[in-house]
Amino acid sequence: MTGLRLSAAAAWRLLPVALIGLAILSLWLGGDPQPIRVYEDQISLNDLAEAVEPQPDISQVRDDQHVMYYGIHVDKVYELSRQSRTFSADGYIWVEWDAETQRLMEEKQISPARLIRLVNQIESWDSTFEPVTEQPVPLSAGRFYQRYRFSSRFYDDEINFHRDPFDSLTLPVVAEVAADAMSQKYQQTLLYPHHQQNGFLGLSGDLSGYQLQGAVLNSYLHTYPSRFGSWYQPVQSQARLEIIYQSDYWSAFVNWVLPLIIVMSVVLLSPAVAGSLGDVRLAIPSTALLTLIFLQQAYHDDLPSLPYLTFLDQLFACSYLIAMGLFALFTWGTNVYTKAAEDEKEAAMARIDRVDFVFQCVSIAGFSVVAIMTWTSTH
Picture 1: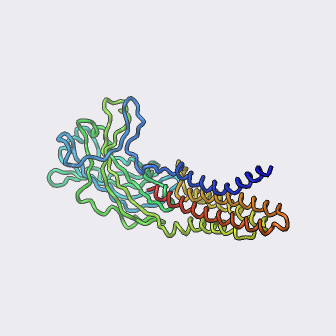
Picture 2: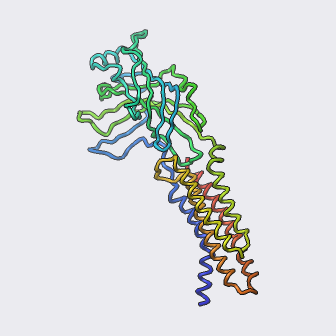
Picture 3: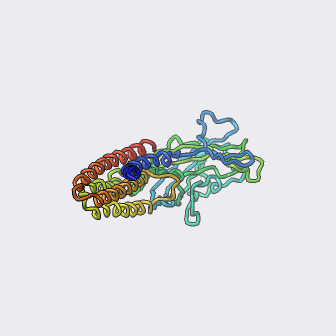
């Protein structure tokens, strides 16, 4: 019986350490970062696969391909919703092409309104995408020019919350050649950034709560996974403007990380309460657990459902386990002190204080390891 009591006491002592180890293990199981952009979708049907790949350099354009130059300017960005992964933007898109491409458009009866489309546009009923002029504007050397005005809501397929709340935000405006006759194998039209493209953003390009880092304009080839009843698999040239924002680190720290640190500081200082005050000690971790739950719920109110844990979620998970370990430790300490004889109370107090100190050291080390490993394993 004495051996069983010793084994049970040893198990109680090791439980807090085991919980901290479980917190670190959860990092490896749940913190595997996902790529920011996936260009290829491996789901295939009848040997057709969807892919979005970088477009070859303009020097590799074949003689049977047409080239159209484009530019994108965004006047303002607003109504960002991280929960629905959408945002609104107003601006202009313009394209310029040569006489040979114009002949192809006239032959296929492709009007300016059918030339290009916004790929990631949503809620089209409340959106605007229209040519500024009804007919293309003739330029010198037989070239033509068309400008489009847009005001729409867009879906953000680039959002990444792995380091949230210290995350970066990429908002894309994506357009591509809309006419099927201009995406065939022998009549392909490619979009390339205009050499005079500058000023991607207007004065209202700032986004509340984020710092503007810049904008990138690139071209891609979008291969569709269906032939849409035709004999060819369409490959459409795609223009993509990516506006890059960075969250304000100090604001994110004060709003989310600092409250968590304050709660955990109270939790880790609670072992300093005398071991004889069992009721007071037991109330601290249970109250901290409730506070942590409400903090995390408030944090997730602005986030969509995610298949992975964010940086702050990893800290919350570690904090839960520390608070639970502390509750188990205080339960053990209260039982040890209550069951000890009067002449053994002092020895029991000293024993509880030693275990409390070990728990504090292990908890601080485990929390720091989780924070560092989560940060370095995500990007």
